[in-house]
Length: 84
Image 1 (tube, helix red, strand yellow):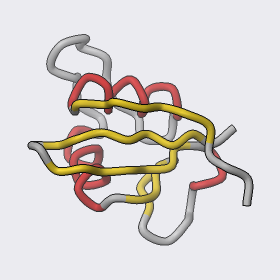
Image 2 (image 1 turned 90 degrees about the horizontal axis):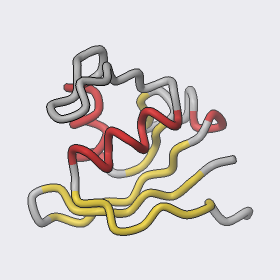
Image 3 (image 1 turned 120 degrees about the vertical axis):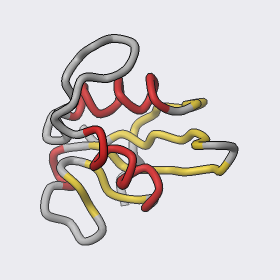
Image 4 (image 1 turned 90 degrees about the vertical axis):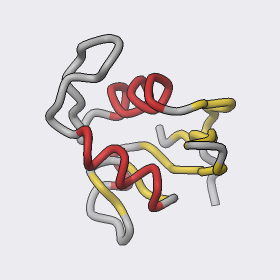
């Protein structure tokens, strides 16, 4: 199931879609499509331990991506993507 993650990076709003159906989509990295700022942040941290948890980010794992965004940014909403 795809999810929408909304939050702020340095005070700037972002929204991304996270889910396996995003793999290979234009403007995507791993299972994430949407805001370029969030994609660049995830690309930078991919394969590296996250600063607080120490978990190594894998951008092909939707659960890990959501956890990383919650650790690296100010996430205020994670919800199901609307079918459309």
